[in-house]
Image (tube, rainbow, N blue to C red):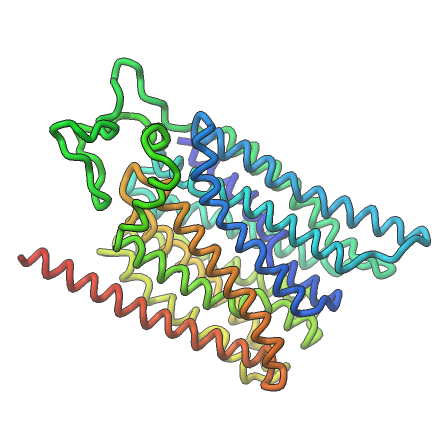
Length: 459
């Protein structure tokens, strides 16, 4: 099934996402003394790009398969990173030869727009990738598959952060050449990831003698499946769901189905709210460390390496626990409270205490973040009816992206407005409060669903 290709593709993709992600963008902004309102705008754009999932739901109907769409769009989206890399090199050379100074703010805006469009295009492949992979991975193996895939990704993140910690401080004559080395490596990893992904197999289209899938004909004697169950066995064919859905539903019809699925919308709303509460503070930690506390970005990169090590070491444990649990929600209680309380110490600790605490916090965040990611993926697959993946995945990503963008932007504006009250310290306390509120809401909601299901079984 090409599992190894998927693992290595994910590893190279993770390295790319690590190096061009908000961590190093925020750290570089702090080192260059970029103003906080501009950073708030810049760091929110990639999250807005997540609405590309909805774009993908509409656009991929013009392609022959999910794999075809995923590969083509990934090539375009990842090639966009050549633009800010080339401009940075050209403007730095011009300045070195006595020309105009490096246009810092202009380049940061170009970088933000590149991140936005790369995220937009990359996001549009998320639901097609998930739909494609879902047909390849048996349900009973998904927990371990995603755990192993995450381990490969976290191993790549460890290597990426270790390399960044080594090179990021290379600034001969004031030029940030270390960041240039990282940018070139990121582009190379994007090329490798896309190549490996193109080598992965895909489920075959329906054979001519097998006829058309019954789901396309609602007037048959067998009632069409509801949004809460997969098609009956007699109605299934070896075809992938996208071949059917593209022929029978418009974009608006596709998106209406998950919107009217109460179980899915409950999960997606809670997940989006939790992500928004996390992004209130998360993008601003590197900026706070480098600008406010004067901690070099190389140290922050080393702390992030510890986070990746924690995720790498515990991903298999999380995967096995999820596969054995009655429901993925039961595992959520082990990681969500820790993530919710994570920013609290930074609201009250002194700079010296923060430097001592931060490495341990990053390690713990890697452990719990690994569990949260796997649990969220399991819940997404659980709440998505078979054969309807693209619309559900697209709406989930769009909601998550909108919440992330909103949280990021509001976090930057809040910290700027709260400077008389402590600035970032007030922001970290606010984020902790918001996270705890969502965790309490999620616990009550999942408990209500559990009791309702238990009552229906008794009846």
